[in-house]
Length: 264
Ligand code: NAD
Image (cartoon, rainbow, N blue to C red; front, top):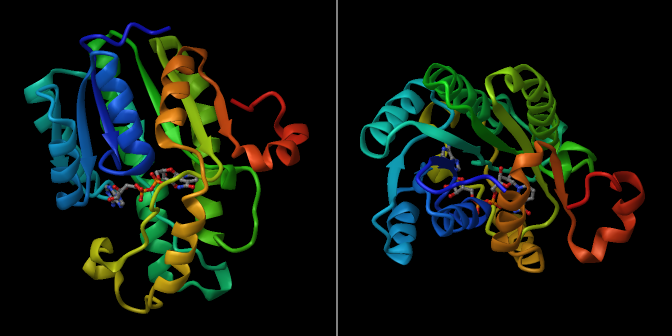
């Protein structure tokens, strides 16, 4: 297993759900960890719960490359060079492609795909320049392998994140930088879709969010896997540089044949 102690990790979407699970697991391994999230109040409550001097919060919208560079500078000034990058922030509008507006496309692509690109483009040159290798974990989804129809833009972004990550794994190997892909099925989290973090410029033409549907899905997600279980498994296996699929036990048989070599 990787020697995590003393390394600096940058976890996007680290204030809730899977990201917060990763933050806890990394702190337990002796890392310094930056929670990079758009929701200030979530960062504050995560920091209060963790109560650890080795964790800091940085408010950032991952869809902005300028904001990512500022956040990277802030974290590295306090905790030193980032050698563990978790591009994990994500949103889901739970709607089909034909029901989506241009604004919806821009928002979900901005966070789920450009957010990952921005993380990679911000930190990879820094990791290469530091010359100490590193590890990147990009959160895609089982929805990056299978399309179920409903989350159309979401599917699009997650297939793309998986493709980009596979490509990066080859190109970054020569720098000693490993790349893994985290593909959860259903996770016990509240996957947000709320206009409080949609950039104001993307409100025009946006369909109102179906809060009842989001609440229903958030309810369904309460039957999902525990973020801490997923996080521990990812940390344990990161050295292998591979794609991990986390299937909820209920669906494991259905996906076993398709994904035998990827199931974590
Ligand atoms: P979550 O909503 O609990 O956590 C996501 C975090 O991302 C939140 O803290 C949110 O504030 C943050 N975020 C949203 N927009 C942001 C932005 N523009 N910039 C920075 N931070 C932003 O959701 P989760 O379930 O923990 O999801 C984490 C990742 O796992 C996502 O990429 C998601 O697509 C993926 N995933 C989740 C599930 C699931 O069942 N929950 C399944 C498969 C994949």
